[in-house]
Image 1 (cartoon, rainbow, N blue to C red):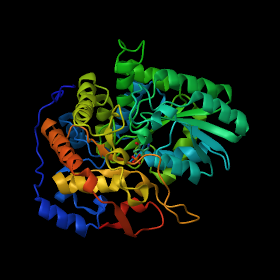
Image 2 (cartoon, helix red, strand yellow; image 1 turned 90 degrees about the vertical axis):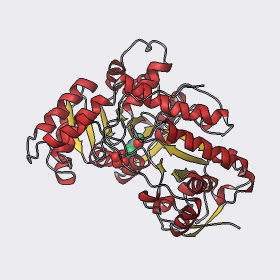
Image 3 (cartoon, rainbow, N blue to C red; image 1 turned 60 degrees about the vertical axis):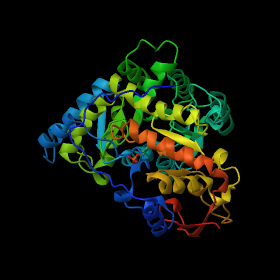
Length: 459
Ligand SMILES: *Cc1c(COP(=O)(O)O)cnc(C)c1O
């Protein structure tokens, strides 16, 4: 049983959160049409909706905010960011952007040609969208271990290298433009990717003339897992592991709202390809803003440069991953099913296993998310058939391979007692799981329905 890792920081500023009663929450959830995205955050006790942009910045980052240089061009924050990227990733060029999808919007049209494929261990949804908006086709080739939620594997986020070779053979390298390695593999549950896998995928890509891009949102958490689990890396520093991993790629896109612990920000890194970087700068100006700010305030650039370094601090990562492992071990002890082992940023509860009597078209992942709010004021969300939506041609509900309810953990925000509240809530829910009912959608928009759809509980 994992012991809780005490916070490697102390608290200087607090934010009050509201306590509500079950009766109040029943009323609030009904008013939100049983869609947790429609809840006011002020009515949420513990918010595990996402780990994106929800972290707590450090005193040093806040100091950076205060001293940020707001010049339009050549602001100091840009050079701080450049220094951090040289130091951490050993990349020559960096372009700040407003968030991860801004990086994708700028970079992918420069790399993807109409009708060509881009291969990934698994695309995050905005990354997939930007490959498709650039006219390309996105192909996921994650290893089969990712789909088995009950069996332990060290690196469930890996690319299936055999499938990758077969796929290149099948469609022809001339019809493929790039390989995107998502670290950690968010869509597979925040599961890590080994350095060996990045290296091998890169070798296959290079042999076929394909560019390698890292989707780098969780560069630090991935490197921590490598240090824990991959042979030969146990005595390397996180910094060395990050450098080696990124040495196998040509460029990265990054959402800095994750491991760089800022509330807004992103970046594109280019290792040494000066022509590509020139093109990146050319695209940035019309889309994101002048090249030394890229859609960010000067103060945001300073906070980002500091956050990039704090994100790879080993004491911090030991605590960060330890916190999530603590939650996982408590759930395991209580017999609550989840994607095992836990990922770097979240626990994915296996709603299909907990609520086997609720069929996919009655949304078990969504039912569990609603129940978590009613039980304890905890907000989490469905990653299953409710999120997946309907077949655009037939209008029929699609069946997701997995029905998850995701508890995504904000960085440096919640403490052990909050995690215990979550575990206790799930124990209560498990006791009456067989009585729980599914949901029906009463209204939905055409795309990305989960954000705004309206639902009602089935009788
Ligand atoms: C969050 C995320 C993105 C998109 O970044 P935003 O900052 O939300 O635009 C891309 N890839 C991965 C893996 C992510 O987790």
